[in-house]
Image (cartoon, helix red, strand yellow):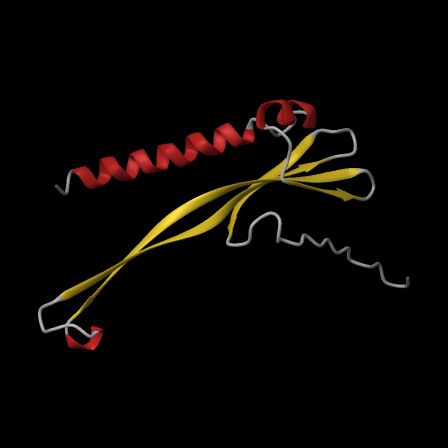
Length: 130
């Protein structure tokens, strides 16, 4: 059994590396090619001077299992109560696009807020003396 742990770790790392390579192929690609492949973004935010941030959101469901044992959990001694809760998160893939329509950065984040409810606000650092 212990010999399976390194193999599992290698598979997980290879999967993450493969996903990163797949996502990084978009760096230098055009916004139009991205939209042809992914469809229209969930949200678009214009950034001065002429750039954009494209937000693609996908709902992901997670299961959280927890176990409580004994009288502290309201059960009898030796009894196990298992809670198996499902909850939703949103996986956001965020692309930064320059004024020429070329993707120059991307990231993925999980949020518990749906795209309809999330409010994206951008702030710029003000220069001293202005």
